Image 1 (tube, rainbow, N blue to C red):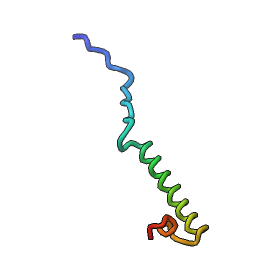
Image 2: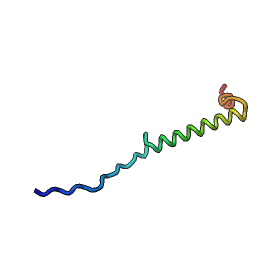
Image 3: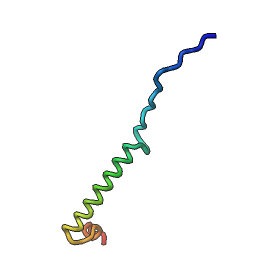
Image 4: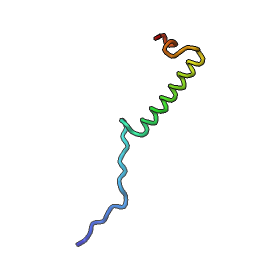
Length: 57
């Protein structure tokens, strides 16, 4: 009996373009860090909290 040759490379699946993938989570974390630092800067330079600065409190 002859044996069929086995593949030498395994296929690499494509990463998803949406949903919970590594890139989306990394981007979301960076945006949250930037937003948090900007909120601290607004509170420091204006002397009031973010909600009062926005006119909500």
